[in-house]
Length: 404
Image (cartoon, rainbow, N blue to C red; front, side):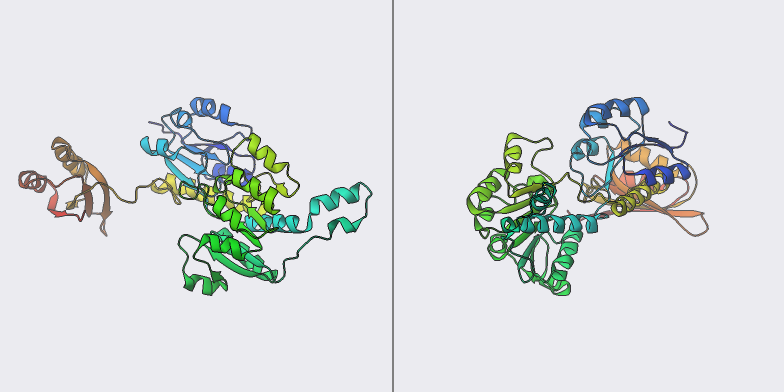
């Protein structure tokens, strides 16, 4: 058992504020912004951190198994792309994230990409630097005012994109898995319940859904073929949301203009390379949530998560806490608040091969008594329940069946 302060390994160059704050809070902080996917496992093995903070570096099962002390992984961003959550769950390592603290920054980049696609800003800059001032080469911009902006995913990022769309005088409509008409009315936008219809109705499409199994290739051939010729598609979500092969076809055949901040593969595949070689496709460096403002907000959130885990044993914004358990019975125990009571209860339950799925123990005012609520894999029989009631300092014990 480690008796020294919890050790936090931060493998991210933009979290200096978190390094300072955690050191001030008494944590043993190791900041190594130069770690890579290949060197992270060795660093975890050698340093044995209790907490690992990453952003963009994959955390594999090998890394999770490299140290028995590793109890919490914090992704300094939204979601947990690249972190093996299943492996973390198997070894009881919590995985938390800092959702939407960079929502405004991502929305700002989304509109930067939209304007880039419409005005071809990089080409204009390059021509100007080369001494060419022939503006007739850039007369094909459609403009944004009065155009339709379709938003896919109306979370915090999507809402920030919607605000900026309205400020540009655009007609905004949105599709989202859990969107309601009432929510759209509050935001002053229109609900589009069919994703393909959104493609048909939009001059500009901005993607901000979470990348997961449900949204993998959400934008495939059917959606891309339905887009208006010459429309703009911007993705500041995760690359896996778009079928890049189908996107390449849409760029070549329908003149779709594209702005991407993430791609289907972490390292450029031949397909991604061909896509980025198209003159109508603009790529950025996965920097949507990376601004000074956003980094400061993420650092603050990461510190909050680490401190809550250290002080309360829980991790806010945790991604791998079970939404339900296999418990079929609830044992409620009123007992004197003194050593050994719960230990004896657990011993009896373990002897009967009854697993504790979840529990809490609430201390009553004055600290003399407590109420324990213990969720069990199955109900104890009458004899075991009587044995629990007979434990010294137990006031009462009741068993209730839980709904399946």
